Image 1 (cartoon, rainbow, N blue to C red):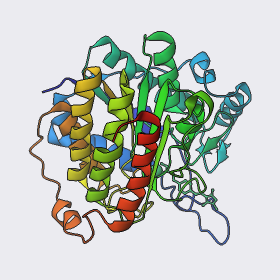
Image 2 (cartoon, protein in one colour):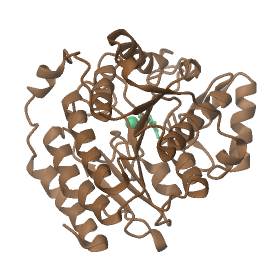
Image 3 (tube, rainbow, N blue to C red):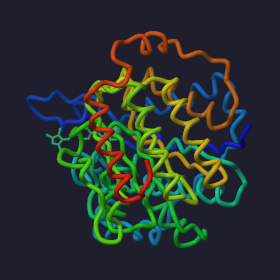
Image 4 (cartoon, rainbow, N blue to C red):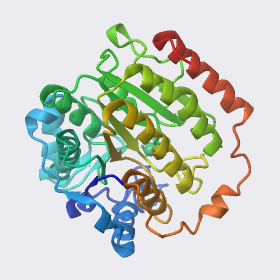
Length: 370
Ligand code: 9RB
Ligand code: ZN
């Protein structure tokens, strides 16, 4: 059993992404509708924790707002002011497909700050590990603009806080969201203090990013690792990616702290991904990561919620990850699991194996391990 911190705030669900048609800005011929990154999916994750009673196994951590100074460790002043102005007014777009509603600025500060609160608690040993169920998400955000629904780079900001104030020297970020963790990667592209590992659907979003040959530059060369997996990848591919690439890279790097960009949009039921993960798969990846983290950094893992757009399935993936983190079963069975696990093609496929061979070579080349 572990003491697992959980960060949530009602205001996270008040970030208003408006009337987009899915992820497209509305306007003829796109009928206005609902944005994919709407509050309900994340609220239903929290609701399942409440309804099942599992919330009582978690140590609740109150998020605070990140300070302007903390945001500016990553973002430009211009960008911060732009978000603030839109948020005081009636909203707008913070860059590329990143809706800002009235009041979204403060909520984005609370989203980044929630990750800081969780990181502080894990580093202080108040909890063993933590999950932050925050929105807006963060892993696509650039220094000078929002991207792909992400306003501020939540993990980047928490990592910079940990490096500056918590005596942390090496951080690993494992991103299992179905999209590439471009914002986090760019932030530390030339920085060996943070190893970024992204597993994502090949060339989905942002396109042209996250190639297996993208490895970082300058002092950061070899500290960015990318696995652009083919569409259709299931638990076999994800588990092999962990065993063959994530584990050796982490064991060679020996981080003091591990962040996870935890999107559930690689699930079999996600409208914005074409992968086949399921709740038991996420439980297995979490368990693998915990074994590694126990060996390397006293189990210190901080997970930040990112994408995941099936309102019906995300709660079961989330609960399953928390069950692993806390080392305690909820007794709730995932009603979709048999169906998802029964789909064809979960075993590692030839094309997936070929990609993993290339990623293994990257780890081998820079970190001398297999
Ligand atoms: C479109 C573009 C997007 C942007 C972001 C996502 C998902 C993000 C996520 C999906 C599609 C561009 C429609 C660029 O869940 N991250 O974790 N679409 N992007 N140009 N156009 C026309
Ligand atoms: Zn995503």
